Image (cartoon, rainbow, N blue to C red):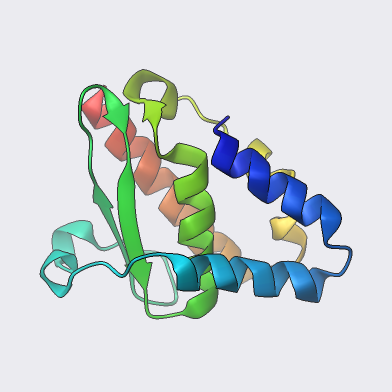
Length: 135
């Protein structure tokens, strides 16, 4: 996995309290550059999320990357976590990332509402499809 994602795993191990972890995810989202309005179009929209979510692929030189945005702060944070997991990975490897297993290391599923969990699954599925299409 990417060093950026491993850093998040280490941060989560250091943060004992779920409230602190939740705040950390939100801070990751706040630190992420916003997606330009021109890219917030239907083609980039992720369906199955309670909030508005857009994921824009940026695949170059066989390397997978994406940018994203949401109107919900926690979801922006989840996008930042997924970016740490996926961005900079070879396209062929990106399609094979077991995001569920990796995210399990953060314990997110235990603390997200079922609606947020379903949205996260929709984002992961969208990223897998984008990676497969690029491979």
